[in-house]
Image 1 (cartoon, rainbow over the protein chains, first blue to last red):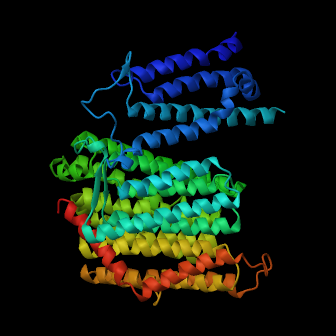
Image 2 (image 1 turned 45 degrees about the horizontal axis):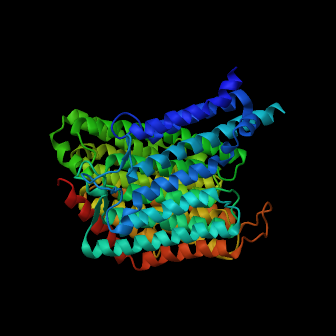
Length: 142
Length: 460
């Protein structure tokens, strides 16, 4: 039962995380919280299936280090890109008071990239940690 | 613009390098290159600051108190330059010897990003954030080498310094509670109207946090294990770059934000500093192992900085800045040289030893001279006697070790000479120490300028 849920849970958790990021600018929620929620689902998979089992069931987990580095770079880029335009860092586009394109409640502006970056970073780092913790136990058991 | 770029370069390259395999030569030298680029950017920034005054950037053009202020004044760029220089020396040292772990180059560059960030930020909370970035990188670095001894050092280092960071964070929360702002300029202004007891409590919290970083006397207990256990390059990084956080923090928070509290606690700081000097000196004489001796010597040397901060006033604070620079370079030189063998190394070590003892023409002499001036200006005979005793002790312990290491044939590592590039790095550092001793005016001017700016900003 736990194994089945562990295999299925990351899917819905991603949806939930997407919701948190989308409503994050008007209500409670942000990239960090979204990342932690997905990482919890991933943690359940590692606990229930072991490192090898979890990574066989969810091959995307093997790309965790890339997600962490890519996420951090994305977050840095969203903070520092205004330098190229001659603005101080962390200026966002479109600026305050300007028109923002929205899809439902999702607002398309550059801080969204920052939240996506943090989201990827949190998932990536926690998955790498889980991988190392789970693997060292499996090695000890062998 | 330049300020933000100087922060961005080590941050991005550090992140990229952490992902790559640092054991490969190319990657290690890329790390060196990125540090060198950061150093050049900081040097240009420093030149701008000295000719045109402090640079400020407010993130996102938000009003003060909402946006984070980055502020490069003379004190900030001086410490940033110093730290990145030490990191560069340590990185070249490891790159030419062959780095032993995947992450070493990346972590050193990230440490440079964290240090640069915390020196140039004008916001108490983002100071904490950069502080944690730097400390996290140094926790990982202190385990570098991966042997039992290094892991033990890393555990002690991480445990004690996490406690220090926690106290720091509590004080940041306290500042926000009593002043309602985190921007350093506003805090300095509003601190005057705060209940004196609350202000003193917060100032003490910051003081303890920075003393833990520096390894001053009652908070020094972690330091010998860590410096002696870590590899020489890492010990050089910790004592020459990471410890600068403590000295900078005492100056920026003590003289900049809490001048009133600093004046009241002046005597206590001088007593603690004196205890550090004597304790570190006496125990260093009693140690046989080079690294352990240098660790106790570090405890003694930072005591001088605390004494100078405790005395207060422009002359003494200038001395504190100057002595922090001198001490960081001395310690980096000695720790790097202590792990090597060969002809140039003995000379470099001797220069470092003379500099710590305060013998001309090394730059340590300039530091000691300024300390004497501080003592005379403060009109304190006890302080002058203390300085003489401290210098005499350092001369004794350093030459004890010098004899043991370089004059006696060592059967354990007999005859194996270290690679030439590593020896050249220590020789270059030694030349820098000598040059700054022979031509100290720029350094003195820089320290004086830094303190003038610091006191001008504070609510003098």
